[in-house]
Structure formats: C-alpha cells, structure tokens
Length: 298
Image (cartoon, rainbow, N blue to C red; front, side, top):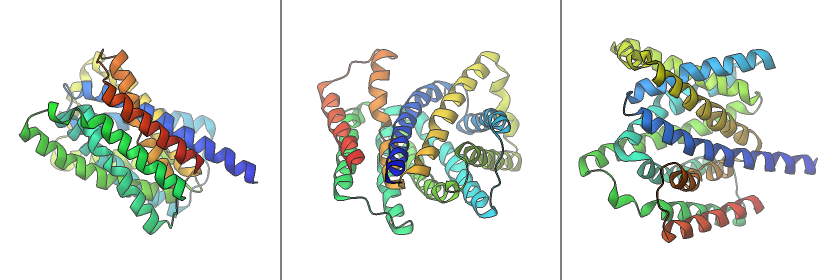
C-alpha cells in the first residue's frame, strides 16, 4: 500500500510539472491570439473547443456516477477558476505580456498553500517547505530581470489589477477542485469544470449583449485552427494534468510544482522566440529546480 502511495505521489508530481510546461506553451500561443481576439472571446472559444474535445473523450472512455456534492464543488471551481480567473489571466497577459504576468502569478502558490493549510489541514514537511521557498525564490529571480523592461505605467497598473483578481479566483478554484475531484475520474472532472466555465461565460455574454462580438474573430478559418491547437494544449496539458496532480498529491505540493511554468518559458523563448538567456536567469532556474527536487524528496 505504501508503494502504491509512492507511485501515485510520483505520478501526481510529474503531472504537475508537465502541466506547467503545457501552460508555458499555451501562454505563448494565447498571447499571440490576444492581438486578434478579446480576452473574453479567447476564454469562451477555449471553453467551447475544450468542452467538445473532452466530451468526445469522456464519451468513449465512459461516464462514471458523480455525486451532487462533487458536481457542485467542481462547478463552483469552474465558475471561479475558469470563467472568472482565466478571463482575468488573459487580460493581464495582454496588458503585461507573458513574463510579467507569470512573475505576478508566482504569488499564487503562496495564497493557495495558505488556503490549503487553513481549510484542508495540509501540513507540508520542513523539507517540502524549504523546497517551496526555494522554488518561489528561483522563479521570481528568473522573471524579475524583465520587470523594468515591460509595458508602460498605465498598462502595468491595469495588468497588475487583473493579475491579482486572477490569483484570488484561481487559488479558491484550486481548493474547490481538490475537494470535488477526490471521487471523480480526472477527465470527467475536467469536463465538468470546463462546462461550468462555459455556462458562466455564456450567461455573462448574453446578459451584456457582447457574445456575438466575442465570437466574430472566429469566422477567420486560420485563427480558428490556431485556437483549436492552443485549446488542445491548454485543456489536456494544462487543465487535465493539473487536476490529475491535485487528485494524487497535496494542493500545496501540486501548486508549487505547477508554478514552475516560467522555467519552461526560458527554453521556449530561446528556441521559439530566439531570445538570449542571461546568466541571471540560469542561476534562478537552477535554484528553482533545486527547490523542486526538495519538494519531491519532502
């Protein structure tokens, strides 16, 4: 039984790390879409396409019974984390760019861990706490170098506001998802979260009369193909694997491993965007990776 727990722990840890890489890649993709599509339009498009993807997979894999409690917790998580949180994330992404948005996002794990300790009674070991602090410090070090280079003051204030709203919605959404996914298959749980996010965005769009405006850019076939690809990366690489991690390991550990997204941004920026990686960033990455190792050991 102990061996099984260890296997699940390793599986959850690697799921969180791969999820971080997927979020890094999808952030670059969605930032490019941000020049053509509004944040709410991007979020709605991602939810529609993601629901279709997952609906097909769940249909073939099979549908398990879901308690009303789990359904409500996953639904509330979808409304807060996806309908609200992801919209704020896309807005911050447009105002601040990927690096600054991800820098502010490093505060998210701290908020989530505090909530997990208070509401879920999680108690990370001293070694895990050391790893958590090292990882957060390394990630912040990696991204801090770019802080003074991005965007003007007005954009920065607006972006920071949206980033903070995203952090709050996302952290509460993660806690709710942890409770909801406990007795539900992860693919099905991801579908429920995304479906609720889609409902929330659709209701908001109809209530404000903006839903047609959000969807106009999708008449462009080339753009539609691009968002199908971006949504695939975000749904199966980001959402599903992050829920898989939450199912098998503590929220505090899953969150800190998932927050390593900026470390994946570095090689992607070097190979895809041809950016030069400074020694400053390499040192920060090494510190953060050391922290990840301690989290695993803890």
